[in-house]
Length: 222
Ligand code: ADP
Ligand code: MG
Image (cartoon, rainbow, N blue to C red; front, side, top):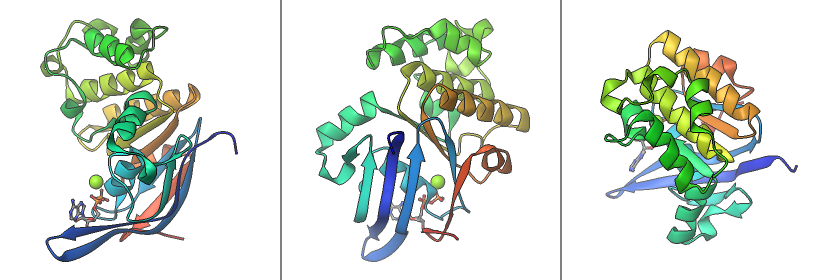
């Protein structure tokens, strides 16, 4: 299918924690498509972050294959993986402030994200407006609430127009209203064409997702 952006094909990931082997993922297959929001759900320790890190080309499977934007991540050398992350993939950490540069204003964060990706047509004002932060454009991260920081991080991803947008528990540190706002923004990113994959056990996120990959002890349930 032409709108397939990322795929895990029987992916396994075993960690060797000083001689103690942990099977974080076992035989996981899943497909992620442009224009859709997918949730990777499951309790803590079920393998959500491990799967997201592989889809972000931050890590590679120990079994099976992960294909991101048409390339199999195990085949890429570190430099090519970095290039893939810079051009096509955006990854958001759980902690809102980890997604932002502490000394840049909201507006500067967006300009720098757009520049780094060579998106000369990007419109930072439009992205700030979309996430409801026009009033805060001159503020730095420490002058924003957690919800505002996470909305700014999503705006940064939207401005960079990644093909694949990965978010690791983006609502975990937010109250209900800010969580719901972030979910709305993920839908907006999907409407703009991104494949959105969000690791979460937050019911607000899971219910909004068009599809759910449910992990239990590293395996897909069902
Ligand atoms: P989740 O994000 O769903 O909480 P993770 O993907 O972080 O789950 O972890 C899945 C399993 O892999 C857990 O048992 C965790 O302890 C283990 N794990 C994760 N990262 C490492 C690592 N770097 N070394 C050893 N074990 C790890
Ligand atoms: Mg996790």
